[in-house]
Image (tube, rainbow, N blue to C red; front, side):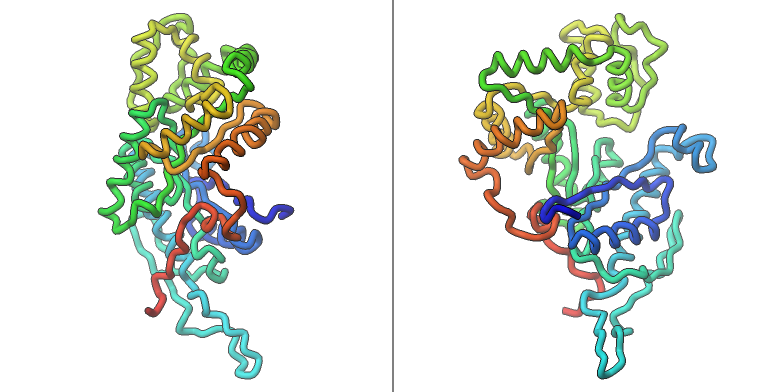
Length: 355
């Protein structure tokens, strides 16, 4: 509330919420913030969460994505309950709203039955921005149909380009323009005045990581796998199929085999950036890296993951951002007032609008 341009994307799971509640909450947030709200659409994965919501175990993989697809479809429909100009507030005629511009959703599906309408006028952004982290096959399908921003974790340019092309290539089947989705890989920048200084900062950060915490983080990155029963100083065990990105898991397995890493070695390497790519160097080195990925069609931007707050974020803002601005790769001022505008995303037209 004390900022004028920063958007806030909050997480709400499709597994243990109802679409009407999520639509209502995020529409309210969008109105309160003047159009700066986003919904991070996630699918819950842990049995521990299920046990807090009347279930002994979690939904199966296929079912939770099937449910998520319906959930997103209902939420978007509810956001269109009122056309943009439905509220007349005409004192002379005594009309508060135009009944012809109010619409019931009347949705009936496998998982949800929602009549509508939403008891909130259409959000300032039309729809709050939908953010997702499509990794598995089902996750990428969900992202291609509904997401407008996607977080991902490629650890090489090759994997990033493949993911980018794969995800954008799916969108035509859903009648979507590839430019209506922004792919943002996560990177953890370690900035120094020299490469040696950046390496020293990285080594200091690594020295603070507890190995047991590193093991838990590795298990999470691999898809919430419990690694506690395996020899931490032995090789990475054979893993069951999980909800994690197959390319990320394959890349970590390949790294461990090629470099003969123990589970401890791999965990310590992964833990600092939670499996995301660590970029160490001077402001110029990091800007070169970011510009290269952008021009090679591997990304539309980046999800910056500072190692230490506020120091690492200050380094990036004070040192790397000016370099990017000098190259014309980062804005000098905000061009819009909403999160959607500042991400370069079009405002969705209501499905009921009369053209």
